[in-house]
Image (cartoon, rainbow, N blue to C red; front, side, top):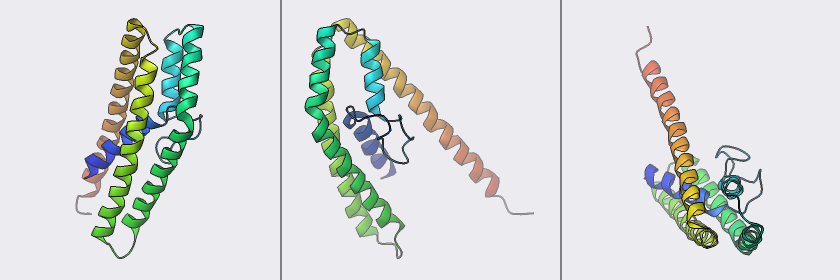
Length: 167
């Protein structure tokens, strides 16, 4: 279930906030600038777009912005509900499962919305620019996986250190 939540949230954040302004990322998800909006904008800037492509990209981003912000807010609300339910006392497994379904549904909508946005943006790129964009995405993915590995290693070390009987 944790993997599904992580995958849902990650996909939603990666694909759904491409039009968000810096500093409007999900709280607790890396802070300002940690969302895909800046990553996508940086990738577009690195592609050496023509003025016509920049204009088209701006129109596409504008077209998707309001709905994307609404979907991001819906996901944030669903995640807050899940967090509140998971932290509630007494523990209620069925309520947590129901709240998670809300997160999954909101994440699904955001992922589809973001994928449509990215597909439309790719439609204005040359084959070379598409290849460069894919290389940028792969590098970002590798960097993110490295950070996740570091977090898991830190947790494993802490557990190992503190799971020993006190002397």
